[in-house]
Length: 271
Image 1: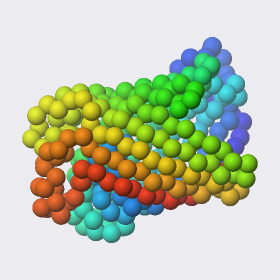
Image 2: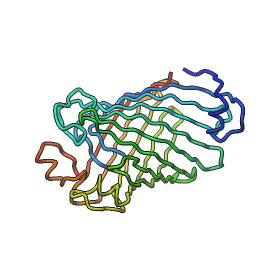
Image 3: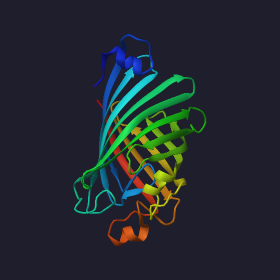
Image 4: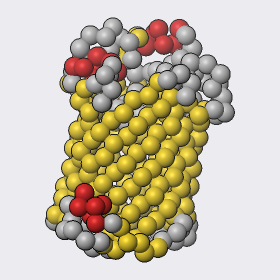
């Protein structure tokens, strides 16, 4: 659904625009994604089993084409009884994580894309468990489209900096098919590394993981798209993650492997 709206001047000010109202387009989209496993953006396998991951987004784009704001809800639903760090038991058919995200992106600088936002992650199977990140991201729209993202985990127990650098390239065919490839390296400081990338809670900083993947998207209609991808992720440390060794995770039937190949297929709809 697209419509013209008038956004109050206070929002325009926060977006770095001059005072006064401005005109914008609002779009609503939804996506249903099936994946063979759930590997997070930092390379950790949260669920080593099939997942259904629906999401919905609302986008606000001003008509000048340089200010873009997006609000997203995402959920991860276990499709079998595979356990993971998010879901210690009895997870089949249940939401084991849900996230809400807000992003502001500025494209008013030639060849540069700048973003900032925040993400809140909740884990319903772990009573009272949640965490939040804020981030900034910069990308250069040239060959291989390099990007760099810096995030800060704002929670006291896990507070610390982490992020990633990546490159990607894609090609659009005339008949509606787009294909792409990407690779990414993730890093963390000592505090974040101790919480997420250590078996014993000791400081662990530097390279955390690396991943690479292929993507494809086909526009069935102007509103409907079919998407697929395959990715390989490898954690750089050999001892374990999240305060336990890999063998210890396996011993309690909660696998969190050191590396993983993940396939996914999804269908998206723009209202």
